[in-house]
Length: 367
Image (cartoon, rainbow, N blue to C red; front, side, top):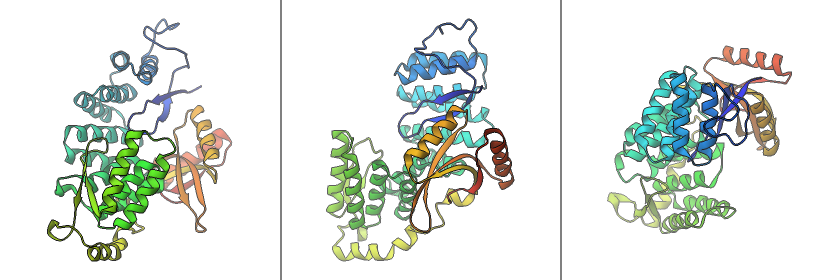
């Protein structure tokens, strides 16, 4: 029976389940109880367990033991990079993410390493490299709401104007909220709208984010959202190098002066046609992706149950949310990302034969 190894998550990345080969054990710690000759997968599983408990030093040691046995083990490299990042060492994290990218031939798994390396570059202040990695992550996985969100935040809020592009930021932020309308992504969309001078929409969007955040957000996080909402109500954009860091409001307008109401209304009338094009963001246009869809549900809970079942069987499913022509919101469960439709059809046929479940091929981003 295939083993399941979970890449432990931090910051914005949703946990990913991929094929591995280890049995389940409770309370794992090194040395591994009941295992006389642990293999690389055993050490990876142990490292993940320790990392989830916040024991990053122990996790790094276990991932290192796995690499001593299998130097090209992608899971060990990637997860050790995550552990270094959680310890606050982006330099070591970048080393491991880069090494992982050299050892993993399956491009649809590499996007996570590109995304995480982008976060590490951003933390170090290497924003051009961060943008490159986030863009590459989207080329490999056009369903990564986190990567869209990170790019949109950079393009809408960074103090250095060479990085800002409000129209593109709105486009990417909308894509992120279409995939997952969580408060953090709505917060970014509001910042992007403010950057283009559409403060009325920015206020409305930020109010939605605050309302959702009331359900479980921390007080400090709510305070930061309210501070940005106050800026948008005052017709001010937001500047910050990171969502977690400190930021400040600025007035935008002709030659940097404060925007009067006529300027704001003009921006809101003229800009939306560019920001709301249906063709999607740049990376998505450059790479056409096909996937295997194994279910479509109106209820998110049903989609999650289907996804969890597939994870237990050793697959790496993801839930893609979209709407039909009548406006109904569907939660589809999908597997894989293939550059050729023939590859996707072969994968779908193999899935149907093995699992005795329906599976159809769908273009990325469509129902």
